[in-house]
Length: 161
Image (cartoon, rainbow, N blue to C red; front, side, top):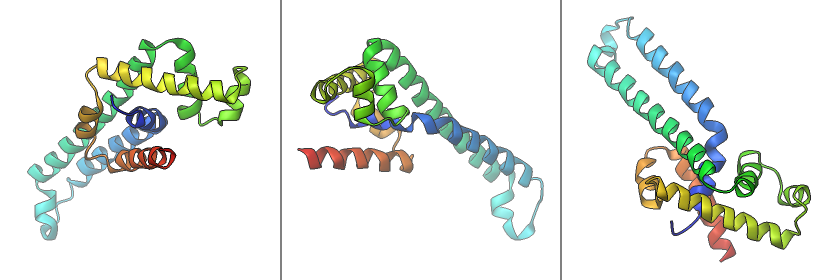
């Protein structure tokens, strides 16, 4: 992987994936239940084919998000435990860099070096599992909320460079 932004993005959104997939389940149920009420004015939206297409699209979206969760879990298992712990504390838990560096008895410069290496290792693990930057970009192209977070990390990286 050329950059670590997708790794950062997926680690950051991990904590929201379960909530989003639960919401998708509720949307599927609501679509199915609401299809029972036939309204002549909304004939196009409530016919069986339209409802089935909406439910299938939502189910496919849920499957993608679950696959991303599994990808993150597997990638974290493929890297060393210390690196995985740093990534979890920084991106999933949202702990500050000073707090994490103190917890691990690292000076800040060493912490940032370890964090960067952990990000690289994580991205390499995802690539070994078949998800490089291009694959992730195309796989998540319709998840606008994830794309926005990715762009935020990308902009932060460009500011530093």
